Length: 106
Image (cartoon, rainbow, N blue to C red; front, top):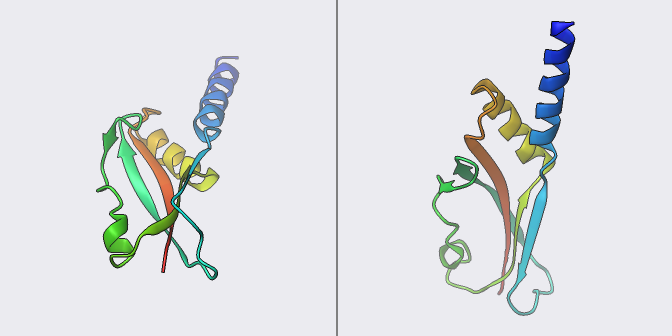
């Protein structure tokens, strides 16, 4: 009986840790006619209170041009990776990866 309770508790914890997908989208003017979108992972820690990765410098990423769209997202893959990484650390919310996708103006 004890094993069953621990299994259910672990399953609920894992489900809660992997179900927190979110997306924020920002527009900055017109989208180019043939947009080229780049994406990269951004890493936060301690329940997203500490930024581990440097902020995405859109001016340098876009070679001095303006950006037209930015999307920050905690995808299923980000959540799964975070859940596995945090599960190794006894379920503590230490690592919170997200994907940053950006489109540069031409």
